[in-house]
Image (cartoon, rainbow, N blue to C red; front, side, top):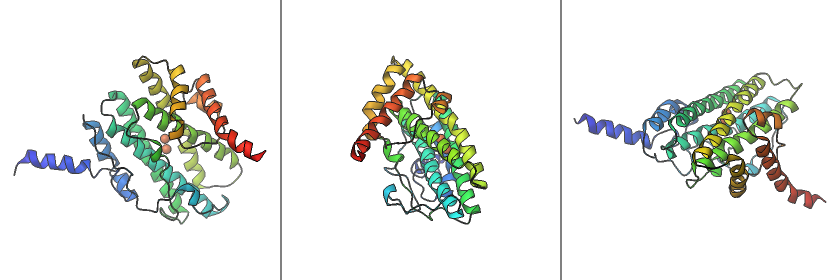
Length: 279
Ligand SMILES: [Fe+2]
Ligand SMILES: [Fe+2]
């Protein structure tokens, strides 16, 4: 038996059996470490599927069933299910970036792998919380909105802006708003999960801000000028976010005053047509 051939076979089979190709959510989490190891040890791009594997119904959000109130166990479990779907996509997007940008700075890739691992832990927390409430993954449909916001044509700066500064950043605004809204409602285990995730997400967004500024400068770009231009160019690729921008959290997550203003301007322009309809 040629040992080198069998190692090569193992490597190439892993390249199409990593977490992005796996359907079962528990098997995906289990494969997180070997998938991240595969990504970090490769100098070449690794194949990613057009859409990541799922073992539950995938449906555009607007066709998802109505939500129950958060004072009910079902409402809380549904919240955790929706969050689990977001955490899963966040994990997959981080892994995808590692697979698609082997040339990115080594430290960036190592920090991104740690971020991906943290997303897989958030996912597990949501699944456990849901089960403790008597529900399970697949009790409701999921969406792929976050995954669909990126493209193989993105530059590394595009990808950082989209995933970490826009999608995860919007998640920060929304998570904070939700926690404030729930103030006084007894959520039990769900509250602990939400608080931990929201705290750790600040670091994820900060990771995006730091590397966005860093790589922009390495490429000879002025990040203050580049951010509004790039955001404007990518805006039709991004899912619309209506959540109010939280200045304090955004500043904590590395956004400059001008960048926060650009996000507010974008939000205003998204809201403007619906306001006109209401008049
Ligand atoms: Fe997360
Ligand atoms: Fe995150």
